Image (cartoon, rainbow, N blue to C red; front, side):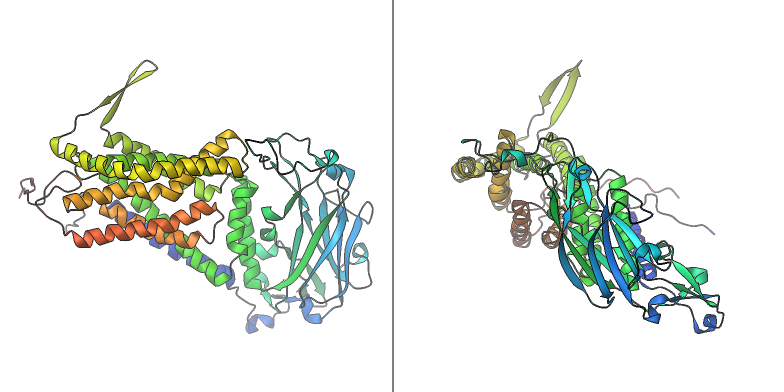
Length: 546
């Protein structure tokens, strides 16, 4: 029996297959997280096999929150009580704001910890053998945002701040910031765990006690670190003696608790890989600011976005790698797309945008630079450390396309240049920036975002003159069109500059125009396609060997 296999596997098929496996595996893992196997009735007869909730006994509880500069405490020495909730009801949510005294050690770039105790009412936590506690730092370290000034007048936003409150830290050194929110949760389900298959994620938060012949687990106390957002951070000045802290509490289900534990572990892993507090803050926002159903939708949307990104890059590179002629293609549009992509990347870098947005923008900028090199037929020769640039010759058909391109750009320049220059002057006079470089990048990127779509019009003009769209990379366009509509969803989820968010919706209009032209100009098989070949040419086939 002979097994026939294809000579060359399809990279697209392989990518789609891996994507399907990844989605199926993720769904299975998520099901295992939110669905925990309880101790069955048959297991309940074995008194040593099931672990029951201590909360089912309805004990009278008290919540106490202490602060200290030490990472571990053994008694009530050197601690400050900032919140005490007597007759604590685990079913009732609350939110309270307290003023916390900031020790001198913390004001000098030190750390302050919060110890949260859940113990029996009327007892001190150190004297209660059935108390549970958890610790969380109330400070974190971040590089402060550079001060913005008016580049003409030199006036700063914080010019009126008193001299004693001004920071003396260097802008490139991380300083201590205050976490102004502390979010607490208690798992309130009367869930009976199977002692032989305890979930590892919940197990590290559990404390067991033996009561008679049965084992009980004490209330599971959890701190929601995902609710600690960068927008809630406050710089700790050396003159600050008190800072506000908002303590909020809400009950949590077992499924959501396990999911939240996994998400916090994922954020911690990102930080270990070098992601900053601001980068991980974007991930936190996806989880905290959306409900679980929308979060599930976000996951699938993000997965498809990654797939279409890969396929778009793959087909775009394949298209330009095989490209032999620039007939029907706007060279100026390619150069503008290269310039605008690089400017957008530098702008996002200057704005310290999330790595989730920055990395794809950087990869796109590299690809656009390579495409510009191909469009100009540029070759680079190195004589030692000095490069020599050589440009290839254009055919008559390419020169005719270039004439259409130049004609379209001539009309656009009458509108585009005055608008860009006027916008740059207006922003210089009325908006504050960190530096002249920041103003220059912002001026360029505002021009790209506001009027950049106009540079896509020369390609539409060339399509109109040639009455054809066969020369365009439609596979890559299709994947990019899907991603454009996905970007519309992400524009409301991931934090990004407003101009970048508006640009996502602008691209929708451009793709719709391209689709209209594809319907208006049917493919003429006598014309050359994007690879410089005609469909009417008979392909050369290798002789078949018997």
